[in-house]
Amino acid sequence: MDLSLSTETMGDRTIVRVGGEIDVYTAPKLREQLVELVNDGSFHLVVDMEGVDFLDSTGLGVLVGGLKRVRAHEGSLRLVCNQERILKIFRITGLTKVFPIHTSVEEAVAATD
Amino acid sequence: MATVELRFSALPEHVRTARLVAAAVARRAGVDEAVLDEVRLAVGEACTRAVGLHQHGGISAPVRVLLIEEEKQFSIEVGDEAPHAVPGDRGSGDGSADADGETEEDEMGLAVISGLVDDVEVSAGESGGSIRMRWPTVPPPTVLA
Image (cartoon, each protein chain N blue to C red):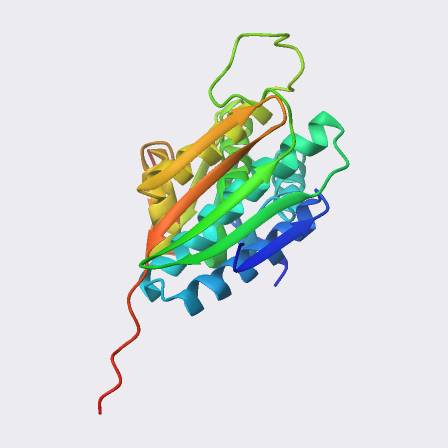
């Protein structure tokens, strides 16, 4: 299982749909994607993790890096995740306080701070 | 002797293999199905850390994973050969060795492991370090006569 990535624009938000496994091998692909989006001027990102089967601390590091990048442009990075085993990793590391986590892409797109 | 011993070149692409093998052996050993996700994640974190230590230290030796089935428990030991890899030892030595983020990720990996696994020992010395994790196993159901 590799990592799959696709992007879609909804208004001023860019949805990044991630599928497969995010680990030390595949995380650089996700990092490149997020860096590219920010460099191209997309500062409001929604990362849809519903298709993610596995996430480790390397993946968390990439998401934190993405958050730092969009915040430098007063942007936002929201996550969509309903999977308990993935949410658990965010809880263990205290990152539920750092990332807004939504139950659907629609909810994330509609959200404002 | 370990039930299964795995040695792999310190490359990120092999960490997934280690996760899959560890989960398969853990399942066979009787680790509860509900805990297998945690085993997979914890062993992945330990291997990722070892791969990072070997790569940054220019160590060509493989990363070693011992999967040990014992009575009532299952242990995983992930060993690296990075010298002085004292966990949490930041600030000493030359602080410029690590790019920012690498240390952060290393510590996040350890944070995930300690958050997931109740029984974990992290050791480090001049000849390398290891992370040993243990999980209880469920005895196989008694065969009815």
